Amino acid sequence: MVSFIYLINILNRWEYNEMKQILCFGDSNTWGYDGESRERLPWGVRWTSLLQEKLNKEEYRVIEEGLCGRTTVFEDPLRDGRKGTALLPTLLETHA
Image 1 (cartoon, helix red, strand yellow):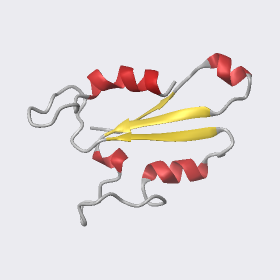
Image 2 (spheres, one colour):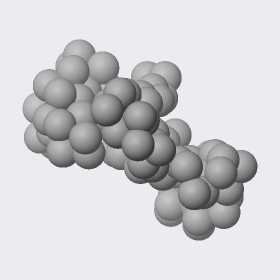
Image 3 (cartoon, helix red, strand yellow):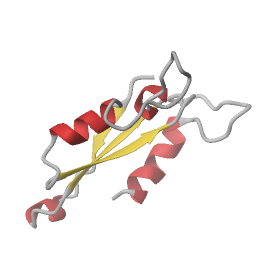
Image 4 (cartoon, one colour):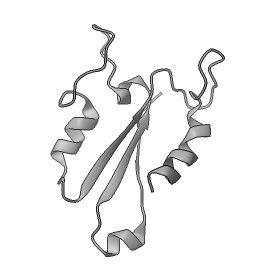
């Protein structure tokens, strides 16, 4: 699954120059899975943290919502909560 980046576009917040939030929603790549160690990559190495560091920290906040095993449309019979299309609307509302 390709990692998706959603800019939570709340125009009335932008008018007042409030912080913009970028929700990085995806699978193990977004979570920062290291295939060699089978652990999570540390902050400063994960692409989501590199994105945060490159952006103006006064204007943007990067939210990591990666989960190993997440798919776009398929539910995992052994692990609940992996079907991305079912979770995304709730996460958008949570981080709005």
